[in-house]
Length: 389
Image: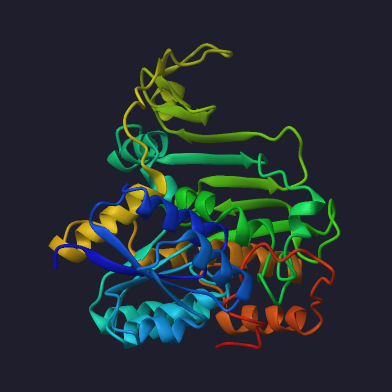
């Protein structure tokens, strides 16, 4: 195999972006061979804008059974991610899944188990892992050079969306169509990076507002507190209602603090750990000596293209993925725990009861309302969700 023959399932916003990147030659080891969408408007778009040798299908199953592809990229609404991934595994196809991994961890766990049995390549589209800022943060935290984590804080409120965004598709911001709001749509990358760099917490307590800033039924304002096994604490604050928003990620450790903001990474490095200083110091208002360092975060940031190129390299030569598909459950565990905490009004210990989460979600799905008189600019390959398990 000289190139990976790829089929894209779902030609909405993300699927179209991936198709265009491949057709521009940015993924030289991938050949776009087919696309699928159940929305006739998107198929018409594909007929008019994609090359004639890219086959168009009106169902994902027809694409996967065509024999034209070695791999699929799943870019449908969230509930369909595990469903189509598992259908790909059962056919021996390599699979790349757009974020999030799914809507509820019980289903994603089944997807991961199916992937392990299949032996195919399974990747997640966590393109933010290619950002040199976050790569450097992970390197420093994981190395232990700065000691243990004491506190993490991420205020990520630059996800502003106007009402027109939510009115662009009937499935958007509904429990039945999307399974959540800002946590499931905008923040999967941030939640993935948070745990990728800092590890998973053991306790989660969250406060949410549902439709606070928009006419929607899901969360658009979230404040979460977490605790880690070593006693460290953290906060995660996000919304789609703030203008202007903020993106500031801080990690305080025994021997310094890392701050990522505005594309820069700053390290305040202590001369000695806080514990060592406090044990030796005799001055009531003393503080340890520290150095402020602007870290070098230059370098390539290939984002989606980088993830796809690594996926092709893994299929063709066994090279390393940017993010293994099985890792998608981690960030989803965080968002599920946040939702469960807000719904029940209490702290949630990890691991949580996945069946309880599913039951609580289904209560909301059953009363969910699809918007009418909207412009469906995003395809909905998965159709209406009816309780996929």
